[in-house]
Length: 396
Ligand SMILES: Cc1cc2nc3c(=O)[nH]c(=O)nc-3n(C[C@H](O)[C@H](O)[C@H](O)COP(=O)(O)OP(=O)(O)OC[C@H]3O[C@@H](n4cnc5c(N)ncnc54)[C@H](O)[C@@H]3O)c2cc1C
Image (cartoon, rainbow, N blue to C red):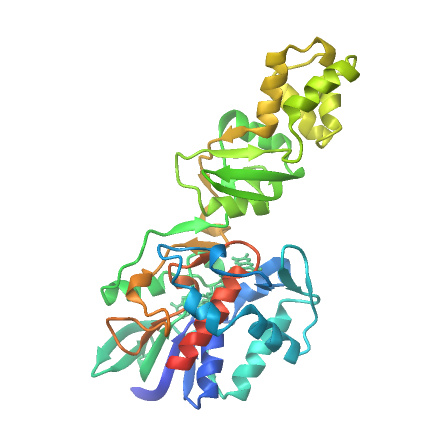
């Protein structure tokens, strides 16, 4: 038996952007359906921010985003700001706090944000169906006809693709959005896992493994892009906020400059200590500035075991360069299995930034992470999902 169902708007993907778009379209009295292929909605919100969802950033602006067109996101951010989302969170009496650098987290749980979005969907009578895979999409006379695996047909005048990126496939990520873009001959930029730990081999891998769990405040740099945040050694390489941030700028065969002690010029410090504490072993001197496990690992890797008073200028330079200007060449990243986002996506040239509608096909919209707009770590990616979802919701 064939069933046809008509809606004004069908949103594919019940994530942050899709839910926001559906709520806003519902406020405009549109008949809205969200189709989700997983058994649960908003799984990424649930696992985000260590379970507390870093839902926005007080300082979010276009400078926090990577895209082939850095200006593309500005229009959406001007129409729906972080303060608009904060007002919604306050309206639902969700308690939150600023952790650092403007990052806002729920006090209690990310589930508070999901509950809030579900409540808003219910108020606007948005229908949500789960466990539903779309088999085909056809465009006919300005209508979109979607057919599911079970041969149910949904017909709508506005179709919104909100299926996100490729990261964490085990909780529902798919390449659906990019495939639809291909079907409609829309350009997709190169895709890379981003906000992702970096991996190493040989000596540096052994060095990292021996320090697994040790964390420091570091500065990491590629060309002129620098991040000063936490760094943690792991069994596979290095991670932590500074590394996740720089991973979005990293490409294969490119090295990264790491400063393990950005607040201290070790060349000067070590030369002073050679005069002040000549009898101290070098690794003990380094332990005054770095975790002692790291200090020991550095001297062991450099094969230096002597009192600082006996060290030559070249030995001290070797140590200070390692600490302040360590050039490391990652072999890769941990990939989409652990990446927080996908860098790249639907080419912004294909989309009207004021509406999120596809320029070539009226009624077809793309929102959220599936577009080539990728935020830094710190709540920016959700803000893009809220803002782009809001804008599409005003125009579908
Ligand atoms: C571990 C982790 C932690 C994160 N923490 C934060 C954070 O604290 N702050 C922050 O700003 N960002 C964070 N992010 C990034 C953020 O989660 C995403 O950028 C954001 O969820 C993107 O929203 P979206 O709606 O575009 O896509 P998503 O939230 O990924 O939603 C896409 C939805 O589409 C569904 N879908 C996919 N394919 C299909 C299909 N074929 N048919 C139907 N449905 C489909 C998916 O199941 C999903 O429900 C984190 C990401 C990860 C992986």
